[in-house]
Length: 307
Image (cartoon, rainbow, N blue to C red; front, side, top):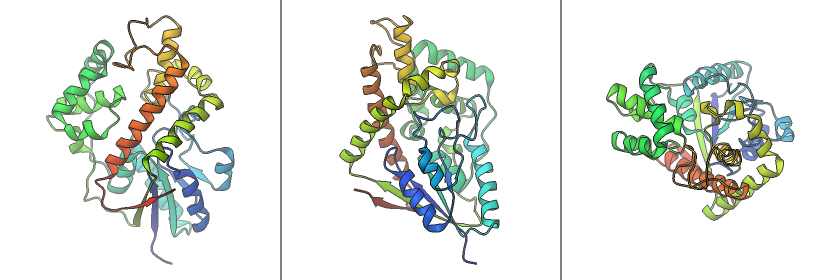
């Protein structure tokens, strides 16, 4: 038996990871192990670009619609569950396993392991959450930029809950949130190979814009409406969902033409669906850029440009 190898297919959103990973899985007779922090949620399908029924039928997928948004899920939990699955699959005779995803923090957790994060300070969390509601995310972002520039540059700073968590750790421990991220000394008993997919920027941005329109055609608005009872959960503070929630708020009269909701500070009110689509496209492009910046520091990634 050859060396056990985990092949991780990563890259920015909409680059084509799903098709590439399925081709690799068929080549190596492997399932696809998803490493996406949102596709795990069974209530979120369209806005998270879950593989199609045909793609899911082509090879077995793990960590797709495996959890519910009502249960808190973390990179630490993913590390434990994914490692258990990977070792089980290797024991079943697989020599190469294929993993695919765009969640850099989850990839890092699986590859390097996570340091122990401090317990949540509920009082501090409540205080920061109140600030988020009353001041908007920009105030918290600026404080995070001052205390932890690395986290400011790498996390999804449009996601208020992630900013709150990072700032909470900084204030509670006196250490940057980024200093807790990974432990480079953690070793795995299998080889890891990382392939990063890219495309020319104009091609990637065009794919993003077209995919957002496809999501709308497939029923994204209806999916977001079905999730209104859960909109305050961390999983829903996600590009593609929060912009539609803001449009709903305007329609319901919760936001005036002169003001805007807490999830879109600085952008003005989301008065039309067209405006929501425009913001989703823009914010997704910004997210793709941050993903590429995050992985740009990883010298172990072998980059492959798709046309």
